[in-house]
Image 1: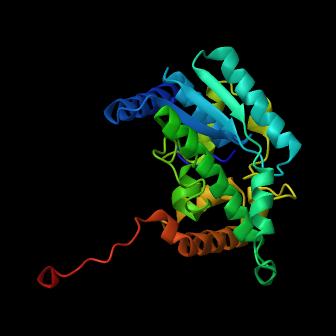
Image 2: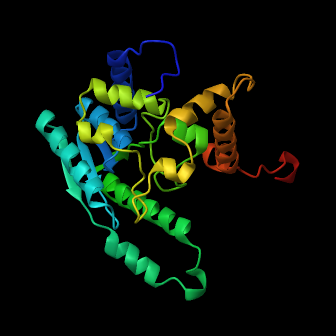
Image 3: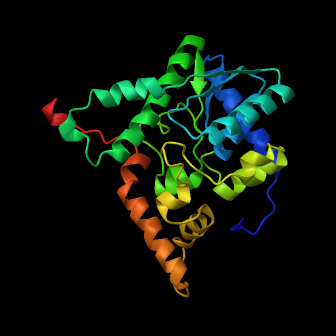
Amino acid sequence: MYKFVNYKMKEKEVIQHITNWISNYSEKSNTNGFVVGISGGIDSALTSTISALSGKPTLCIEMPIYQNKQQVERGKNHIRWLQENFKNINSMEIDLSNVFQSFTSKIPSSYKEKNDLSLVNVRARLRMTTLYYFAQINNYLVLGTGNKVEDFGVGFFTKFGDGGVDISPIADLLKSEVFELARYHKIIDEIISAKPTDGLWNDNRTDEEQIGATYDELEKAMLQELKSEVNLSQREIEVMSIYKSFNSSNRHKMVPIPVCAIPKDYI
């Protein structure tokens, strides 16, 4: 794992800070706990672990939609690990495959060509809807699981899908820092060693295959963008181009929704 920042992370302090932050936010918002979507990946594993550390009720929900069985099993194993170590964990699995199939069956045939990415985003939004259903019933907050590279670097998330959350506990952490904290808390090895994937494609493609660069490379590009781009290798130039392309095209996801301001003398 590439080490981008020349410092020793204070893992205990970082975890405690985030745990206090989500707890204080819950108290100020008069909510009772947290709900987290579990994908079998490192980000949701760390987020749910931090939620568990808060001591507040935490509902972990798996929501497979024709998802790879290994990914689903990793999620189950992580939840099992949480329940062995914390008393405030509840969980459920809601298979949304039939809901997704029902939706796709209603799409007019003229729209069914070249709509793979649109349908992938539908999967993410069905999951978001499910999380908020149970959040409202229990008066819980939906915890986001996006990291800094995804949320503010390349915008690798679905708007109003996995990006539709109440608060984002780990969005100021680079992907390498997420891994470091996961190791610190001894999250199960199969989660840590798995290649990052959003679990939204039938062919089990990884994030790297979708983006064209590893998170290590993207982190370096994200930090390098603030400096001079001279003396970059050919591969680093390619990754910088990939990074800037994603950052530009997904910028609309990273900024507040634009509001049309009415001139004062009009109203």
